[in-house]
Amino acid sequence: LIAELSESVMMDPTTAFTTAKGDEAAGGGGGGEEDDEVRETSKMRRLLELANELKNGHDQYTARLAILSLLALFQDILPSYRIRLPTQAEMSVRVAKETKKLWDYERALLSHYQQYLKLLERSWERGKGLGSKDDPPSALAVTSVLALCELLKSAPHFNFRSNILNVVVRQMNNKQCDEISSACCSAVGHVFKTDAQGEVALEAARLVAKMVKDRGFRVRGQVLRTFLSLPLRVHVDEAQAAKLAAAANAKKRKKDKEGADIENEMREGSSSVDKILLARSQADTLEAVTLTYFRILKSEDLAAEHIAELLPPALEGLAKFAHLINMDTVVDLLSVLKSLLKKVDALPLDASLNCVLTAFQTLQGPGREMQIDQKEYVTPLYSQLPRLATGTSSRQHTEIALKCLDAAFIKRREYSTVRIAAFVKQLCTVSLHAPPCTSAPLLAFVRQLFQRYPAVHQMLENEQDVITSGTYEPDLDDPEQTNPFATSAWELATLKFHYKQEVESHASGAASLRILQFPAEAPDRVRKNMVRDADEMYIECKRLKKKHPLESRGQDRRQQARFITPRKTG
Image (tube, rainbow, N blue to C red):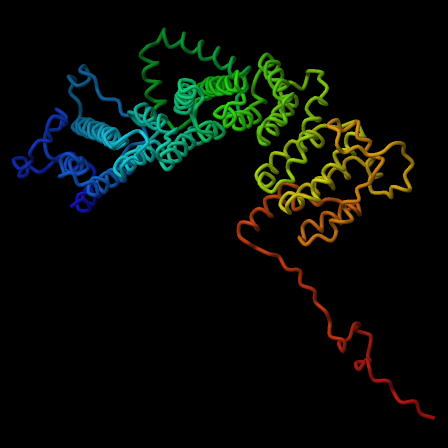
């Protein structure tokens, strides 16, 4: 029955909300839930009754099938614009028959869609906690929330989007069912990524920020990671100019209200992007996101478990959006980062690396005019590199470490040769003990340092041929106090015999000062390829071809039999 009803609706959606005259008597009303405008038992009404557990004989399996069928139908028939019902004054005016038919269809569609959303919300409320708060939700409740997530993805600009957002955002931190939490986070992240106008993304960002604040930051880390999907591109200063332009346009609209109403309706039906509205939306979104990040960083108890879980995504988000903030926020951010870096060893590795990366990107973006010695951020990076040698964290955090190294030595010019040599020695030491997926990209970066800073080529010479004073001190936290030129990069000679071909190739290339070939040998590309090979369990075998000893090595050589000596005569 569900398949037949769904197929008939798909064939002609205009007849989905009405029934034939002969069936009017057979249609028993839907009870108190049915809308006053639609009193017939239409095809969509029958599907809604099948999806209601209380009306189909408490059959959850049938209710789930009906919910999923209605989801597919609404995803197909919902328009891409927001429906505005006609007012009483508009209804009193005589209009064309086609216009009246369209109004009736849109009113019926909106009514049934609202009933479907209410049904999903009631199904979730009934089944989210069967016995106690720790019990997992029922299968029907899970299906209802997943249907809301799919509707948010497919129709974020349609009516009742705020109702869907409220339910989905609340369940982003669902602790009873990981499937619900992941689906809700994915749906909100999809809205952040695909919203071209920025209005829906702004509403969702404010709801997420409010939820994080109201729950005292006791939320999952993936809730905060959804902010990373935001494609924010508007600087705060540009947003101020956009707000002034919007205020000027508002004054013009007050003078001509009829023209403003027509312009608003045309904008809703148009697919073009209003740049002024987009700039304002992105500026307000950036404000809500950065405010959430700062509240986490300025929390009194950073050692608490729930705060420690949110530090890495908060710092990662600040590293991504740091180039968009203004100068006043830069000063405040750098002071917070300095206080965090003083206890960098107590932070998780991803949090400490993201802290360094945020500082570098802030100084290279809006804070580039500030005369600040970046040694305060280079030194913590040097002390955190040995933590990459552990197998549990190396694969996960190598990408962030490469970004930090690139920001410290490639995107900016380092004038301290001792500091560069200390990092070369530290990277070689870490590569000797780290897994191959970390060793190869770090050695590729060492080759990049040799290519950019020729003054550190001395690290490749024999220790006995170099005239220096003192000894190398690898245990010091300050790279400039380690005296790196008192030793050599002898680890490269050992890594030449590594069992992994990529590690052996980059170690030999660094030792022979072979130029790095971009983009194939870029450190990040090397890391991605090795991680992919490890996931696919791919093992590259180096095949050596040998010629047969009886084959000719040159075309001018006529002698074919190599081991036959001609007899001497005479």
